[in-house]
Image (cartoon, rainbow, N blue to C red; front, side, top):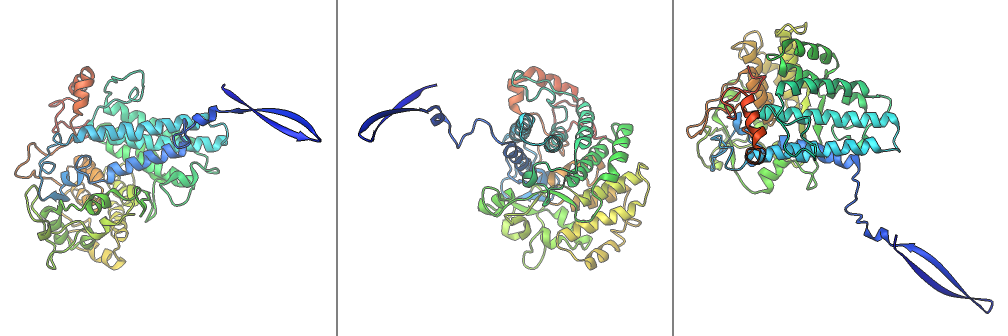
Length: 478
């Protein structure tokens, strides 16, 4: 330790006294704006926001899911509508966002909490469980995007070239981890408190519902690949999942930059007008007299006018995303009651649960319409139409649920993509300039092909099918 001696002469009653003291100058090396240890709440909050941004953004360098599921189409530059993932390095950027911006921060947050000697044991357990649930959620996004991915060794600094692990094996482990996290919650204590972000109140009971809702989702995603494993997860989680209209896990964006909804940044702040409604979605909404149409899209000359997917057109001549999507503080949705009710309807049809599928189907649609600003009268009018009513709507239960889920998942492009692959409905026809068939996964990043080639090659072969292609199905996509 470097020290400096300070000498001061004091005159006391005619006597001169010399006093020395020491001062530690090493603290001058501490940059208070760059702390050596970041607070766990900051790391957790940053990771949660990055995950919300990743799923909410419509930046064509990162998130093109609204285009893939043909809710929107581009009107000028058509590369992404034509499934060109490579031009803007979309797989690389998405991969980096999941691993570096989300999972890495969550892992570091976990380490800080584990070493925290100040908080109570119950608070520590709750915080670790919250971190774990967000990590499980993010990992499922990675698997649902790419298939087999680095997992158990992916964040190991001593192992820069991690192997690609089997997607189904990862899913099984996610469910095991989720069970452990849910069992560790102590509802009598708090977790991250006001920094929990996903819920307005800080009750751990909301996290228990959220965790079980995620478990229900993971189980239903597994249903065609591992029926017995899926059935166990579904029957255990369903009673404890969201069960009341309005229940939702969201990221609460702010009106103050840089914490605004990235949609506002993409659609308003950027000053660009790249996206219009597709004829596919608008024609469907009009055919069903859907009351959400005016919330989803704007009118042109008093009419809703769609642009054919994958074709060019003038922004002003076609309907574009509605005003609500341009709000700075529009929340980003992780899971909501509508999703869980659709899952209940499907689980009943698959004989995993007892009950009436039509009731849960109606609940899901009702919640969606109300959440978009609709009225109970509009709900009743919509649901009583033969084209919507569960007993008379066209198609199998997968088609009925798949269509309504696609509509309810407007502005949740990633989730709509997962469900369209899982339920095989709606069916999307590629645009006239598409460079591939409809994508059922993202190809691996070019950086992985170059820097982790041996494991990339093995991972590609383990996918089966055509290997690392957008047409090779992920294990649960049967």
